[in-house]
Image (cartoon, rainbow, N blue to C red; front, top):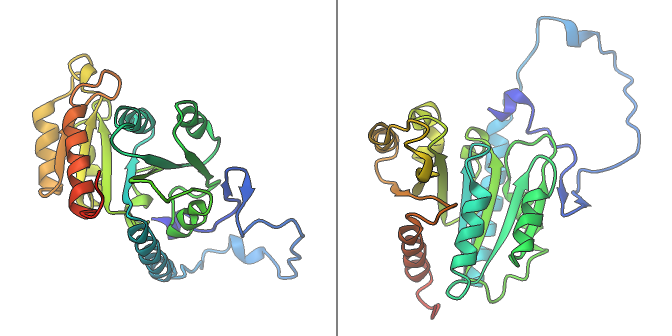
Length: 264
């Protein structure tokens, strides 16, 4: 996880071009010798739990702020290339008359997804994480400062393309919606069980090409149910719109259930 790979050592995080609080340009002298880096007696410092505890506190603060605004918040993680941006774009475009939504988009580099969503008139804030392979509650909190949340119904957080580290980080969301595309293989839920186990919904995307890529639907659904028996499974094509009506009904049902005072 993150404490081994080093991605929890935050470098430059940018929110729509603005540097995060870790950015500074002054030099750091290193008077200590570096020879010990090549020795075999390395030590692992158990900091992961402390990092998660801090993140969980900030996530609860985010959750309180979201609820005060009457927002339904979705955390949407997946592997790279699963079609997250297309799925989010189609959802918000199709529901534009029924649900008012905005997006926080996370990527290691570029703001390509944010530009794509903005071109469709979708309010979007980009978080560029640099070497960090997941979004954290603090990043979301800072991005919220750039979004006019009043009057919105739904906030969609498009997480970094990764099925490992984002599974451990609560962002303050109401629903974790994990995407799985038919091109990824039917055993993906078994390989990354924590991500799927913590999901309230699993969206199987690109079903319009399932036959062409030899996707074994029965095996995929069986594997999802094995690791996430309580998750709602939705089969869609964000490109053609196939199955999206079921997703929209699910989303609107949660808007009504979790925001009963919202007339929409």
